[in-house]
Amino acid sequence: MNRLLKPLLLVILMLFGQVVPAWALGVSDFVSVADSASGALYNPAGLVSLENKNFLIEYRFSGRDLAMGWDDLLIYSVAESRGTGALYVARSQDLIGIQLYSRYLTLGYSYGWQASENIALGVAAKFSNYGIYNKYTGSFVKEIDSKDFLLDFGLVAEVTDSFKVGLAIHNIGRDDSIQTLNYQSTVGCSYTFDNKLVIAAEIYDFLNEGKSGPNPIEGSLLRLGARVNIGEYLRIHAVAEEDLDDWDYSGRMFGVELDNQNISVGASWYQGEGSFIDDELIQVTINYKF
Image (tube, rainbow, N blue to C red; front, side, top):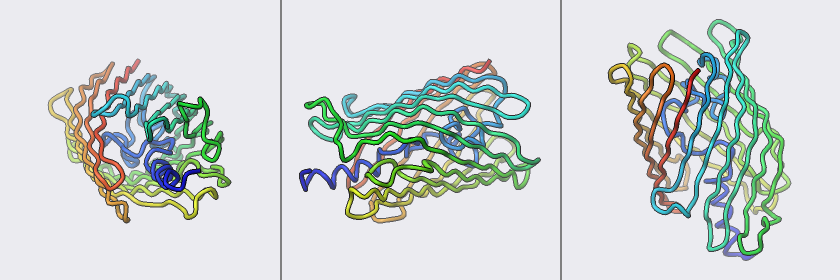
């Protein structure tokens, strides 16, 4: 592989090579909150907060150029007396060169249950196909093409009525023989004020130590977020994140959500800046509850 191309691919893997998107576009996706159907990806333990059935559709794309990339997500969850299960399909495509795209497809099942009065646990099993696709040849780059069966684990602990801590570990069982999906772990906490304001903080770590690369790729992000309820139906989200290593990366997000008993509709805008990436993301989410 071209010596100039390979470092670029490794950086793209760090940013895009993950079943769980690096950008949590809303406080509801923080591991200690995880109170929407998207918890099936971010923290399966959070599924216990759902009621009845949920069908979520999410679409995310580059705000600067639609050809740069997109993500979409479908989740169907069912809450029962013993716990809440969710089936999901996640896909992604990102342009990383004139003819090269990073792509992933993930099929998964997440399950969350109340292990004790104050502790919820969750697990997810998923099949993931990830690789770098060459549009010109119509095939994947062999050095970076994986098909893995993976596991996720999550926990949410209610320390007090207002204070929670959360933990999620993703992509357990990844194939270390090639440069493929990242190991990911996130730990965080949140505090709720009078059921109107939620503030949250978390640290997100990733590690990719595939043998096709000269050195492991690793890093950490600090995320801070706030979600405020205005009136009966309106929610506003704000998130800021900063890398804790040498990637020179930071991001910020703003989102609006309309939520009632049957349906919620949200839109989010994200801007990330760094040495290797400078982009805007727009996300639209519809969650039907029945």
